[in-house]
Length: 163
Image 1 (tube, rainbow, N blue to C red):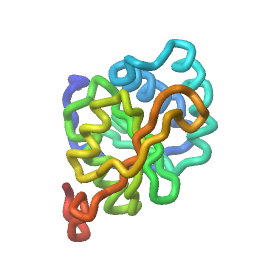
Image 2: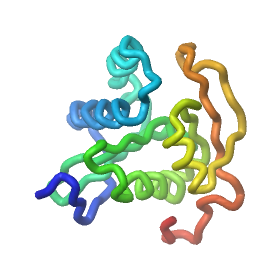
Image 3: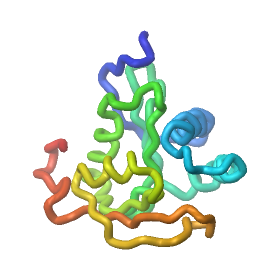
Image 4: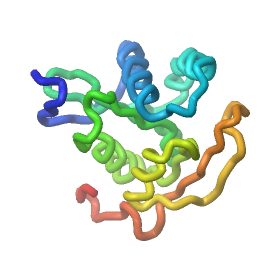
């Protein structure tokens, strides 16, 4: 199968046996979207990911061969992570995971790095609006965060309707 081809992607829960693939997806995504991240901070965050994974409800978008193409981590009503393997970006996987988070998990908040214009654009395109800002990220590093919330006119759809 051509790695760019995505046939019938499905969303499924993640188990610890999937963590190595989630790390690969995270690395692929971050290397392509977080050019502002210092090399030592990249290593720092990557080393902490398994701890973060254990504290979240994780879901993966998979193809027919059960290959993980992207994943989502949610805590309560907040999207804590959404990453797509760079080989599969632009195929609607992020949209599918976001729709799942909002419609099925009732997520309505997400923080994004202020320097990550692609992520900010993605979420605002689907109805999220800036509700606040922090000068540093969740571990105190100098990566400002934008706190986004789903607006009243955002993804709210009839049950079963996709964005």
